[in-house]
Length: 220
Image (cartoon, rainbow, N blue to C red):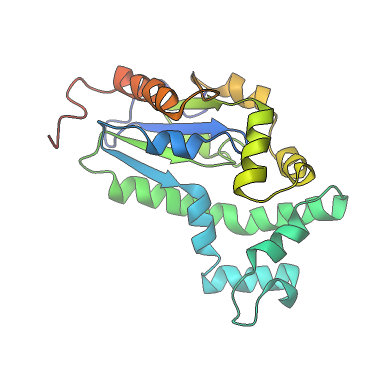
């Protein structure tokens, strides 16, 4: 369960739901298919990508990884950076740790800022982050929801949608906490082995069961 959860919402802000799941679990898609509620979706991975445009972050990355991770226009090449930080060697694991030390504090500040400044007049905040537990961002959450998708389906998705090999999927998966650990930390489980509509309906039911009775009616 969430380390910051008492299963009640902070009275000064809407409740925050943290979404857990493995690579390719479809957790982001499930959240975006939820209807009938006014949700603020805070996408930590998107925040991380946007921060790669920040001059201070770029300077830290250049110091840590050198000029080879930048393209001819001076932008961080995400694929080049990924080649360095994801792998099986100790050196690459250390590189991943370096990158997280640069990005995670900045991502956390952006998460907190979005929750504090953009969450007025909404029903709930949804924090969507691949490394939500690993980075300790679950402290921002009232409840955690685990999107449960079999590993073979997840692998098929990333091979088809991201062009990864099965080996790349395994390497990336190894950098995250085990699925069993994530599942055990969750307050609720959503099955995403079937249709997206069924998974979204299940997630919506969890949201509405925990929100005030008038949630979802504010803007109708």
